[in-house]
Length: 370
Ligand SMILES: Cc1cc2nc3c(=O)[nH]c(=O)nc-3n(C[C@H](O)[C@H](O)[C@H](O)COP(=O)(O)O)c2cc1C
Ligand code: SF4
Image (cartoon, rainbow, N blue to C red):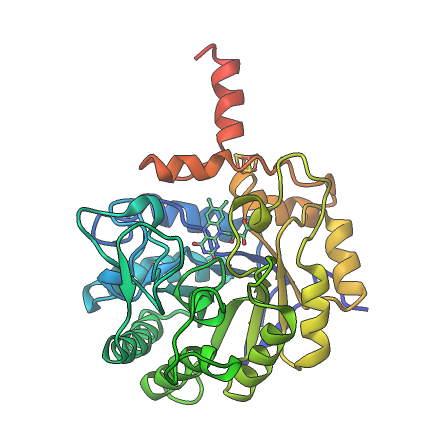
């Protein structure tokens, strides 16, 4: 039976155990997307703390696709980003962790980061949305497809073990897959096949840019968990098609849902909310499946792996609070993660401060009377 500390080999890359740090926007990048000393420190901490694989926070593939301008998001849109990104790779590799760069385009999901008179780009106009946005032209879609290819080539040149496409959480790839945000009637929409064409073309563009061997992974929202949104059957069909295109590992998450539905509610019992989707994915494709969301204990990780519902255990917030969590579990201290899923950490980069556990900060300030 597979256990959490068993190694796994994906695309010839040996990962020392089944734990991965899910992509985490950490707010430490410079205004133009560059890596800083604070970024490197976070990656060193998590790598030293025992995870087998780290996925970076989402890096924008083009200036227009940037959801968090001025809010410390990494860029991979220009060759000048490569040098800084190499520092993240070194931080991981120096401590025997593998590392993938998550690459993304925000589309309409510019949210609170909207700057000036920016008109957001979406697959099609979105009913009821009053903020300035418009549908992408076919030419613009093709440009973004090639931006993804160029970004993946930079990831490879920086030394990342793999690239992970962000196709979850309502960013552009989610928007293409989801019927309410993709009402196009041309080849980029109209049918389930049309709605997933963007993903297929992005994968082909990356293949052209990086060759046959470089690993392409994806964080994929298999369904939107909302009426009228992307349904699981369509998400699984997309996964099958993408696997046939050469996708070689998938992290199962959610599509276009907001806040709590995406990360669970504060005070939730330990509840890996996408576990059944991950188990479905295991049934339909034969590539490694990574499960994220709400996993807080070693026993839960053992259960998920033991029952074959996933091949890797992915966590975000527990590793913000305790970067050394995996090493702690491996040493035999198997108390659950200290993270209480309050999500207050998200507020820090939103305010322009580097990411840390806000609960730890509160306790620290309480203890020092600060
Ligand atoms: C501060 C913060 C930043 C995040 N940044 C990203 C990101 O850049 N890309 C991404 O795919 N998910 C991001 N997420 C979502 C997490 O990767 C993960 O899917 C979610 O938090 C559920 O996992 P957890 O319960 O282990 O925290 C972020 C979550 C948090 C709390
Ligand atoms: S602020 Fe809350 S959700 Fe974030 S790491 Fe700390 S305890 Fe977990």
